[in-house]
Length: 200
Image (cartoon, rainbow, N blue to C red; front, side, top):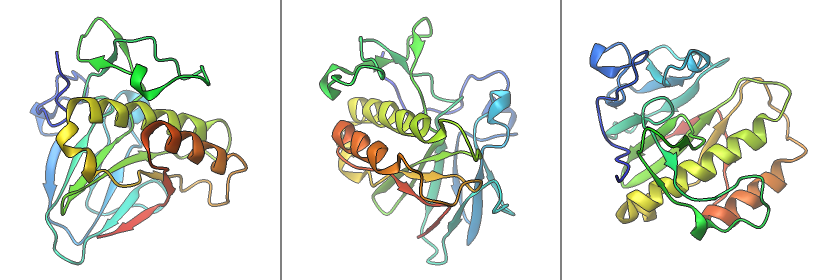
């Protein structure tokens, strides 16, 4: 079955938005808000925070009053790989990728979610690690999430802007950053931006 990235409520028993504790899809009417993934290790989706913490959150400044909504993807949208697309194969081609919502399949890597505003879609991944392979992992999450979104929402492909990668624990330029950006551009057509704040 096709994947509906906009489906709500999700059926995650731990972060089910039917409980209204964490909403999968919501319009935010705040001048400044955060997107927090501090509970991602507990299989909970990213959520909106009205008092953002610059040490953990991706911060959105919306002083223009633009209508903005956030849709959680990781831990909300079940997306399973239906092809032999292998992130460890350097020869992989984007055309080889395919996915559906079959609950018996292997889940793809998924980023936190996306913001949508003014005919613009910005996918977001939040890390809070000073060491390790967080940059490669983030690129892989963008790669598979956006390939799946393009597959199932082709009419919205032109709205996708460069995804944003937030890691408040690592403010330097990563030694592998240019390489990971090149890989992502080769696979989805755009590279990511390292950014902790977005101004709308």
